Length: 82
Image (cartoon, rainbow, N blue to C red; front, top):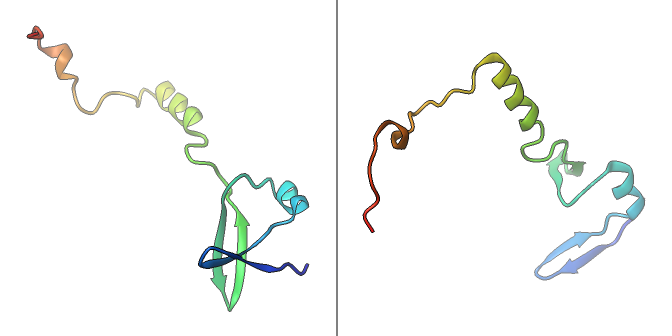
């Protein structure tokens, strides 16, 4: 597929056709690298924090979700001075 390189400010860019964006399920970012004088553009495989909820639930089931630093407010009593 032949695409045009267009000016974008002081840089240049290309437009990805809608059918490619839909086929690869691209949201707003892609990974890009240069290899052997070729530009490789890949969709981002995972979103940030994807799978964290499941990982946290699994940690809880294994009992690995304890605080590493004790909560000082619970261990000492004090009054706020206003």
